[in-house]
Amino acid sequence: MDSKVLILPAAGSGSRMSLEVPKPYLEIAGRTILEHTLRRFLQLEGLVRVVVAASPERMKQARAILDHALPGSLAATVVEGGDERQHSIRNALVEAGDAELVLVHDAVRPFVTPAQIDACCRTAADCGGAVLGVPARDTIKRTGKGRRIVETPSRRELWQAQTPQVFRRELLVRAYEQAREEHFTGTDDASLVERAGGEVRMVEGSRENFKITYPLDLKLARLLLEEH
Ligand code: CTP
Ligand code: MG
Image (cartoon, rainbow, N blue to C red; front, side, top):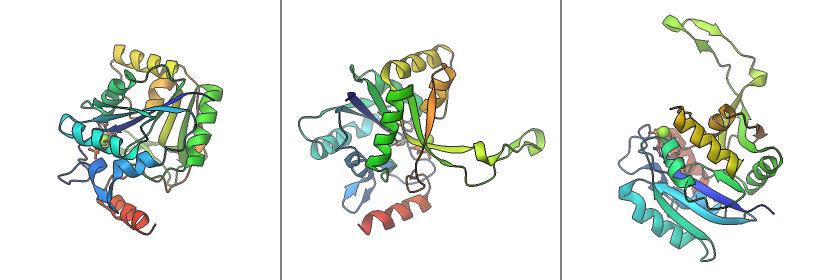
């Protein structure tokens, strides 16, 4: 059984949500979204440590949530996040210890299932990296100058990437180092590993594992979590 560390980036400002409180610290059904998400991972075999990246003014609260939700046997660390999600993950990776696999999961995706987490871990152990995702729902266009459409990639090959994104730790650390050296900023962790030549496979998840991004997502999350 591979040893695993879970990184939960929770240091964003939630600009698309436009609320005072950042998304991971919003409460639904008596718990913060960060805690709902965290609880989805508690049964994971081989999990040895959880690292949360939080903004400076939320570090204390993140610590309190970990202390409250995690069993004492599980190591837990809060690190300061950065301006970009990639910087938050980079800071968290420093605390990853010697675990074999690193799982990165958005603190604002509370609907991931244990089966999906397991499937990603198995694939990553097998080939190096795994990303949970769903087949693209809409036709995607690439536009150029004046928004002229220059390409319509076949939908059969297009996926929407979610998290968890799971990697062998050494591969992910190397990819982050390379991205830093080359001043590359990606929109997810896999893009850094792909760039470094690592193999990353898509694992089919479900649309329920949406990221709470816009006010409408928050409404849906409340509906789903409050009905349980
Ligand atoms: N995140 C982070 N550090 C950042 C930016 C984002 O740790 N500098 C975290 C968020 O807290 C969130 C996850 O990454 O849990 C996914 O990011 P996203 O949904 O984009 O959240 P925000 O960046 O907070 O929202 P927005 O992009 O609307 O500002
Ligand atoms: Mg963001």
